[in-house]
Image (tube, rainbow, N blue to C red; front, side, top):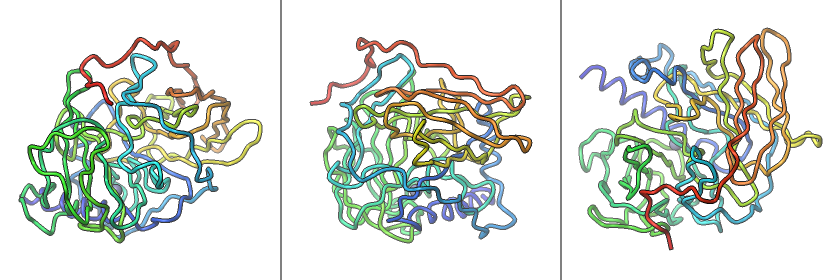
Length: 355
Ligand SMILES: [Zn+2]
């Protein structure tokens, strides 16, 4: 019980970070994950209270990354290789800002060293419709998602909806979470299609302003089963996603490690991203990443980081509609593995066609 209470407090703080900067799209940050292959250890760490719970650790803001205009999104499910899985549409319509706030990425550490953000935040005005990211069944639509006490208005997620999707991944069930709603429209038991309205953006729960906190959970509907939504929501057409695994030479993941990404040769804008912090953030079963940066126009990018007081760099090409991958292993440097040759044939066999 004690651990539960502590965890609750931590999560409260975590969610509270959500909209502190709604309105500012400075790119930056990051994510948290740590021993991606040891979820048990992460679980324990996530329950450890911080000795300085109110210490802010906001990432440094970077340059404005992009204009407001973006190409239309790829249709979902979108997967050009067997290991990409852009199964979800964005939960906010394209006539609004519908990409994650750069300062509050998945795995980011905002309040204490061992508290990470388990979703992404999308800045949106009060009352903006929140859309189903994929077809599925509403299994929860109430206060009390975290505390598991229906109607509990102290719950940090506020009014939230949970969808259990019609498809999974690697034989595991996929869920999506939509939190902080001002009004819930969906009802438990209802089957929804992609784009159906689940509720309206609000500021219920632990938040300082209206926004959508969006989570993807894989294999279980719990706080500890989240996966980085930037790996799952379809990119704009012609754009791709950068995924990295940043380690030291002993293969130990580097946490909250700053990496800079910039288009080459123009050099601007610079995007500053941090690797996942220690806590409840998980790596993808395939990528084993601790850093994700989505919504990058296709092209060549220079990746730079400081290791042992020396600047290290490499180049990665971003391809339309795909994940590009890199690893860094301390003194052993970078390695870049291009995605497998794209094939249009691959589609998740268990998915439901989307109109
Ligand atoms: Zn959030």
